[in-house]
Length: 167
Ligand SMILES: [Fe+2]
Image (cartoon, rainbow, N blue to C red):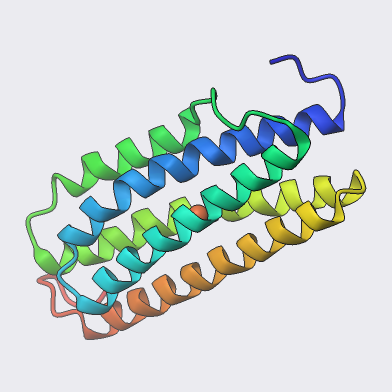
């Protein structure tokens, strides 16, 4: 699509978000299955539900404007997911795998938060208050998931008995 102004840019950003939410939605069940720590597994399963709702919110925003949210493939998120999966496949210890899942999912969350914060600011500055507020609400949800991930990670690091000592 041609991006000529800030409204086109918002649509472009929402298409990218729609694409990466779909990618994350499809990836999370496999990641949750790999988690040995129950809290981490529950957190990842729960995050998938958030993903579905968030994708639907983005679809609703686009629908209100008559924009099609489909048609983009978020290459950055695809690379992030593929990269993390390839590192995960090399892990041979359950404890280390959980730590790597925290690292992998933390990167994904940071990417999502950046996209939602920018899109929210863009929507608000374009006068789309309802959309900007909805996108800011999603960014808040993503930040909560990130904080929970970091807290699980801190617990895992504190309890780590992985060979080689503390991390
Ligand atoms: Fe999300």
